[in-house]
Length: 148
Length: 405
Image (cartoon, rainbow over all chains, first blue to last red; front, side, top):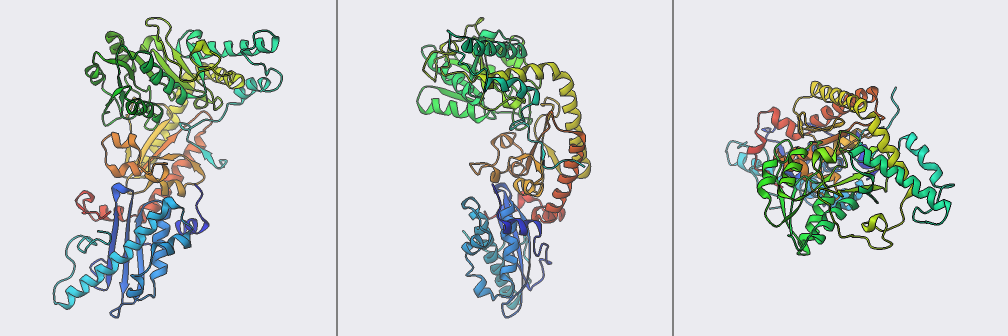
């Protein structure tokens, strides 16, 4: 199977690879997928108090299209308000990267990762404003699943 | 400097050896006769060439030339062996024994028979090295068993099954033994007498011969094996496989068999040393690399390893100038990870991380060195990008995580 030039570009020069400290209260972490399914995406968003995504980092275990989808998403969400980011559909990713039908699940996973990261940030912020300690166990596993 | 891209996927197919091609070429243009034309020199020339090839194939597996049936490839041979035996011996029984890591040509032939209500099939498990237990074969035999079908060596992990023991058990119990020997023939000694094999599938393009030609060995004596043909027509190949013979392909297949027979010992040694070098190099440079298959009972050119925390297809993408294959779901038509690696009972995720290297006749030591470096570098790069590697290094047990798929 041939990859689109955009997938190849993101795969060879991935944007924003890395991690933020997961206990940073300004950071939301979303981990979606499962190793036995062959893809796991970790997306971290640094979000300002008024809900603007200031920075993003990812790490992905998965095929080239999964890596490219998460790399692209880090660029896509930067500067966006979380309310807008929550509306990002996987089809935007499919279109940008020219993903073939068999790779659409990679874009779905990336969409889920955005939602999971924002949900995580909201949960932790809510907990912090309620005066509770943040960070309760595994990263990204405490909030509810984006896809149920 | 090595020439790129490098081909190291010799279990999938092999290039035609130039010596094989030389033998074939006259049969496309000047010696184009139909081997079944009995009344002119063109036909005789074709028949003579086919007879020679039949002898060359027979010699490689210690069979008699009349026991060789030419087919379009090993998939057809497997279909004919399994469906042909079950159909012919239907009054005797309907039970077939095979194994979960067989090639799809065998598994899907068995499933087709099950669906049609023509056979009940026992799929034996394998151990963690991919090997079937001969005792399990013995225990699975019932008075309805008409066929045992176990491959000689596995195409993914290279594990060589205890064929001689299985052959002996089949003889003791009077059950026909079919062996898909596509990966073994020409690479390691295969002997239908010593091994007690009654039916054997082989292929031209896995041994530096052309694609589109295969053969089925059908034992003529002790016992005489009978088959119902799956292709009807002019009664070619002793009535077992009709259709005009692919003379140039058969000539090439014959030449390929003769060459691999002559060079088997030296070539196997060379393949093994290149494979061992590749294996040692990867294990030296990288941690958490797992060998899939048997550590010693393995095809000389085979190396199947899982690079933990790295998905196979992404690795293939990263080493785009090296042709190898992966058991990753993303590289298969079904989007399922390799059923062979999963059958070994290892971590499900290691199937997604598995890479098969197939060292072949035309690979060089320089290529092995290049591939070792290229793969190691890419695995390291992808691990830096892998959340699983990060979690493992933080001491998180990946099994304890509640993944949301």
